[in-house]
Image (tube, rainbow, N blue to C red; front, side, top):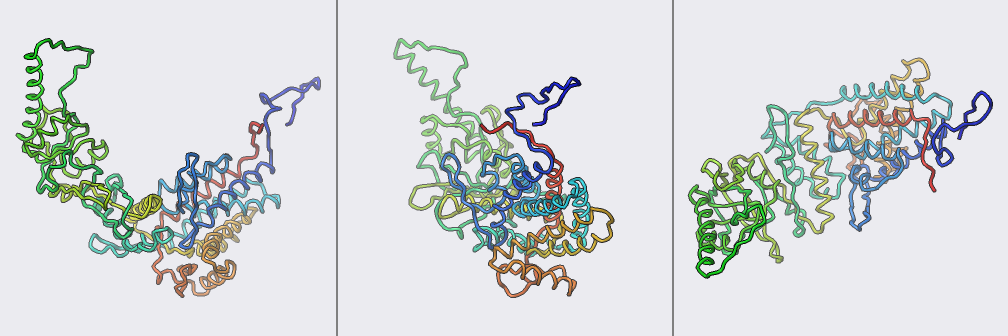
Length: 535
C-alpha cells in the first residue's frame, strides 16, 4: 500500500484502515479482472449450442436446478467477485431485452477479454484497446445489417416464425418436441399480439405447469386455467355460456372493525341473531342470482353456510383465487372485478363460452379451464412433464421461444445461426482493420479473432475438431462469398444454414455484440481495485 509523505518526510495515511485493505494496481488489477471474467465465460462455454451440456445447480436450501439457459445459470451461481457479477448482469440484461442468446453474450465477452489480455502484455494501453473494440463492434453491427434478411410472415403463414423458434429450442432439453412447442409458442404470441402496433404483451400469456403426463401433453388453452376446483363437490363440473361474477369481497357476514362483544342471554335473541345471519347470506346469494351470474369466482373464502346455500340455489362458485389470476380472468372474459356486493350489475359480469373442471391422473388434482372467452387476448400454456425440473426448464425454454417470436414481430430481420453470422462479421472486421492507422488496428484484429470463439465453441461442443472445422467454414465463406455457411452441429451434411433453417433474430445478435463490447470496455478501464482484505 503506497504511503504518502508530507514536506517533513513523515508518512501519513490516505485510505482509512489502509493496513486492512488489499489493493491491486495497474496491470495486476486488469489481469485479475480479466481472469475473473474469463472464468465465468469458461463455465458457460460448454453449454452453448444444440449439443451444449446442462448445468446442475444446488441452492443453499437444497433446491436443485438443471438448466442450460445462460442467465439462469449465472443467477443461481451466487458469484462473489465483483467483475464476475458484471458478467452476470450482462447476461441478465440480454435476457430482459432479447430473451435469447444469454449464453453467447457471455462467451463473447470472455473471448474479448482473453484477446485484450494478449494486447496488454504487448504493452498497448487499455484505453486504446477499448477504443479499437468500439470501432470494431460498430463495423460488426453494420455488417450484420448488411447480411440480414427480411422475413415475411402473416397470421396465416406461421412457418417462418416456427423455424426461428425451433432454432432457439434446439439447444434446450426439450429439443425432441421442439416442433410442437414452437408451434404453441407462436400461436400464443399471435393470439395476444397487436400486429398493427407490432407489440406483444407477454404478461397476457400465462405459463402453468403440472407434474405428471409427458412433454407431448403440453397444450395451449385459449383462455385461463386456474389451479382450483368448485367449492362444493356437488356443483356442476361443466358450465356453458357462463356469466361470471368476479368478486373480491368475502362471502361472510361483515365484521365490525372495532372490538365488540354481543351479549346473548335468551334463546330468542340467539334465534334472531341466527336468522339475521341467514338473511344476510340469502341476500348475498340472491344478489348474485338477480344479476344473472351463473358462476361466482371469489378471492376470499366462504362460510360453510354460504357454500351450502350457493349449492342449493345451483350457483357454482370457486374460492381462494389469487389476485393475478383474477385480473387475467377479468381481461379474458371482459368482466369487471367487483369489490362490494352492492355494486354488482349485469354489465360487470364476464362471459365465457365454456367453464369446465378437469381432473388429472389418480391424484384427484383438479383444475378449472375457462375457455372460449369474450376477449381471447389472454392465453395459457399448460406444460406437463415427468418431474418438476423438466417443467421448470420447459418454462424457461418456452420463455426464450416467446421472446424470440415477440422480437420477430417487432423487427422481422433475421441472420443465420450456427456461427455463420459471427464468422462473416469476423471476416468483415478483419478486412476493415487495415484501414485504421495507429494502435487500434491491433485491437480491431483481436476483435475479429474473438468473434471466432463462438463458432469454435459450437464446433467443440458438437465433438468436431474445433480449429479444422472453423478454418474450413471460414475459407468456404470467403471463397463462395456466402455469409450463410456455419458449423454443422447436428451433422446434417451441409454447412449452409439457409438449407438447415437455422435462424436467429438480427436485433438479438446486434445486442449481443454491443453489450459484450460495453462490458469489456468497462472492465478494461479499471486499473485500481481496493477491497477489504480477506481475514
